[in-house]
Amino acid sequence: MDKYVTIIAAVVSFAVTSLLGFIVIPYLRKLKFGQTILEIGPKWHEKKQGTPTMGGIMIMLGVIFSFAIAFCVSAAFKGSLYMEFKANNRLVTMLSGIIMALLMGAIGFFDDYIKVVKKRNLGLTARQKTFLQLLVSAAYLATLALGGMNETYIPFVGNVNIVKGAGLIFWPIALMFIYGFTNAVNLTDGLDGLASGVTLVVACAFMLASGFLNLSAPNALSASLAGACAGFIVWNAKPAKVFMGDTGSMFLGGMVVALSFAINRPVLLIIMGGVYLMEALSVIIQVAYFKKTKKRIFKMAPIHHHFEMSGFSEEKIVFLFSLVSFVLCFVALLSIIFSW
Image (cartoon, rainbow, N blue to C red; front, side, top):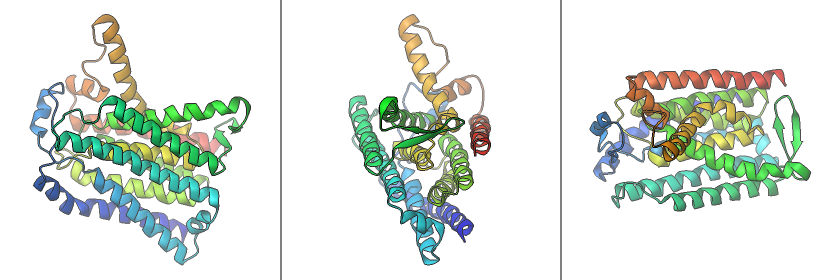
């Protein structure tokens, strides 16, 4: 029965997210919630001006609804997903992760709202966004600590105590880890289908990883995320009919972080999420190098724009980045198999 719960989560999530496009997209158009294309971006992106944004709401609803359905089905048959939730620490880990992702999505929603309604292109200020993200990240980690998280697993090393001695350094590192990955996913959302395509691969990897580890709750949640990403690609593939906006990208960032903690292997996200890191590092390197030399290393950052400026089509970039993500996720899964 358990494998059917995972399938149900993925199928329902795909169906809900894709079908919501028929309702949400016209409504966003009616509200005139269109994307404003910044002048600093590639000139050919100007034709995307006015494309409905904040479509990440579709992903959020797809994930939450499908996971709830999966839980109800499991509860009806006393499946392992239901039984896992009866353990307090698993319940705390999963619910706090989902709430954290939703709150990150809410921050993104306010950022999008300011951009499209208040007509302030940059949305929330950097300080406002940073403060809110760090606040949510800290609250999430506090919940995990109070819920009994006292160790983390590092492949080929084993369980490491994080509540005494040198292990306490885990918490400030984890704070920056959550903040960093949430923003890295946000930076990845710059081409039609890019963030949703890469995250689809990462979500499938987490689905396999949680399956290897016999963790039913993360397995169902990652299936819900994969289904939602696939459903969103129906509308977001080039030419995009809707953008996820910060609402969606920050929710996705929160979700991949939550899944990494749900399987108690956050370090694996450094490998699985290598594309996200590449996008974020390209911006950091570009800014630091320009401040020092007044020259640019990349033609434009994040790095997906560098490939665009080099003549790659959006479709080719999405395919290549998704392929890189697939290879990295495969390597991460091997680390689980060989340290099993």
